[in-house]
Image (cartoon, rainbow, N blue to C red; front, side):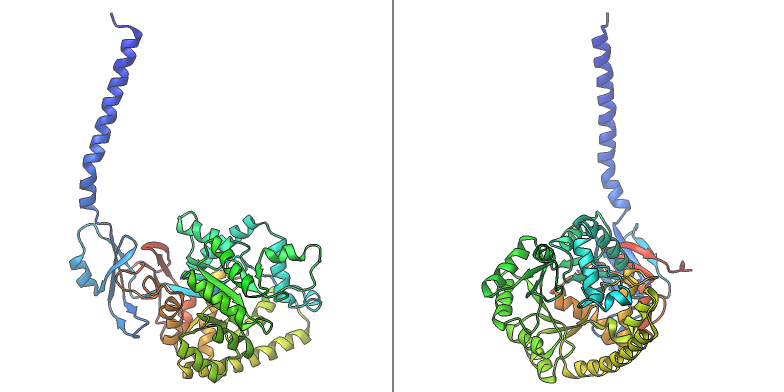
Length: 467
């Protein structure tokens, strides 16, 4: 006679047998699945631009495997090499390019313009007021979440790699970078700088003395001599940054910047130096930084020295073409006198930018371009606002192929990532964008990216189905 125990045991054995059958069937089926799905993707388009040479491959195909580019060639050639089961993505007559690189951005900062009255009352008020609100008015968690939104918007506009140069709190951009790399949130690859290295009073002044030091420490590492310069680099290294950002003014000693560079290079990190006036640029050159950000007042002699030393000039052209006026018009009501000043200032900025760009091109200095975007621009995503730098460079007289190089291969070299990004070549990440028209004929096409792929995965595809 069977007891309840015997019955229960038979049921368990039966269920174990069924489970084993299911397991074995899945195990045995695995090789068959691998045989019927190649894991490859073939992207085809009307044309592919090689920024390095300026050559066009037409028609074009890119074969992708495991998130990296396996082969580039004509579609017929790659179809012959691709095994059955290869996924096909046909972009029709679109133009393919490498994913874009914004080499100077601030993803954890979204500054709104203050009113005209507020702007007139404080030092550096248009920027500093928004910076103070980000530091003291938002929790670190809220700030990272805001950055995640802006990162996604950058990616959707074709920026598959960015270098975030400060204004992210203690480690906000590092945390965001790691979350993107782990696949928890969408966004571009980020090279994170952590806190900026500065001297006292560089950005915010006249803070409440009871709170000022604590507020500043959330955003900056202040340098007071060569020993603190080295310690600041190590402090950022503790948070696993990718690059060191230093803001150089006339109060920064060359020995201090040299100590920063020496310590950073010892740790295999590059140094990006904010330097605008001639004296600060000379300090950066003498100290041996890797890139000079902005560099607006660089003399011909300084550009020659930068070329000789291999120091990159990272242009930040967003304000070259009246962006200040556009943002004010979209954000706040200003008086007629203020608006007139913005118009006049914009005209002067265009003239200076055109002269500056021609000198830079003539000098032969290595250059890249970054948006320096940190502003909330109503009616635009962060990516759309960042992409306005392309037209600004074009209006300043830079040839379109040089603009494209500045945000692809040149930027990749400046970042030290030329073996990973910046061109469509075998072995590099499968980061691709596509536009409907010809970006060489019209650089504004880069403001209307229609297809974005990162790591071989489609982020967006707004192109019409190919027939």
